[in-house]
Length: 479
Ligand code: SF4
Image 1 (cartoon, rainbow, N blue to C red):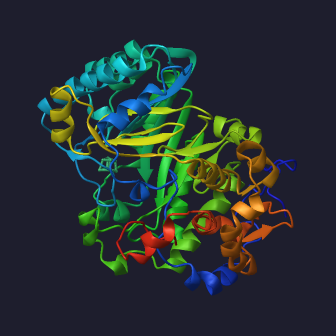
Image 2: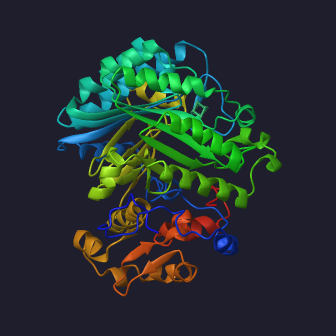
């Protein structure tokens, strides 16, 4: 059986990973794949960035943006009213009204510094606000933040302007402010609607709140709605998550991101409160995931990359068909060829030749800006090899495969020679039925490989071995 939502002309293997998947076969090979691994929202991954990247590098990297016609803008708004116990994001839990004002003053300084280097040439074809909770800001603060960005980098008429919101705190007045700014996409954290799970994760959110916000956004002309869900949370079962999906599908979001819960207690200490017995074991977790995939595909969604699902008329679906789907720190995106200029504490700027992250905590971020300095924390200049591997890993994560002719046309070289080590690493994965590698080196990821996608990408990661051998806890478990 072939996923009816997949174009037969695709050169590679994007599809429905639940089709043709034998859970017993998966379970038999699983012990070989249990372990940590990157999610590849960047390559090289942040822990592999070279030391010594400083403020001057940061400024030099930004200079490369000056001649761009269009860029993607990101703002990180770190505030939340209460802590969700599964969360490993960079956030500040506060109800202090002074903090958002200080933050906005910092953003104004940061944008001013950046614009003094980049100039006013590039226009914003994409704007995205994440967090934290961007709707922690009042309606007036929302308009101020948007104005600060738009004054420096004017949005194009067709700009995609999106925001992550928390239905528990977002008001009609904030929606009105978002519409006045031009936001046309909205993404909501839903996670799970089961009351017992919600109590365990410290996030009580009746689905009616989510539905009301969805309807409120659509009634105001915000065209696209995304829901974030998480599988693998405490007390989840196939049955409880099926009920979550019933509710979610009744609102027909355009996109659904279905993330696996990442148990990373060294980053998110509050996760220690989850007794291991409350979390579904790896087999149950996979069953929940697979039954959710079947349900979403059956409801007309297409599988996009590792953890996204979209209706066929959504831009992510179109980008998949057109070969323009990309993966960056925001997840899957249509921002092909766009550099991402990010502001706000912990934000990561992603350029053709460099990554830069600014200070993660509010105080050092603020202090650097008040002193008139870029709040550089770390960064990495991409070598030619980094750029080629970023593309290869990106194709695997986005299109479930890659064409050797395409890679050689873009980056030159001889694929089989340059990636001989990676092809060798893929041999056991091929024997386990995760991938097919043709005589020329073209790679197609099979349904088992789509479930273990990070492992396929890991074969091409030139930095990974010493990271894993160091024994440092850096990455979440891949299964
Ligand atoms: S999940 Fe979202 S709302 Fe909850 S603490 Fe994390 S960033 Fe804040």
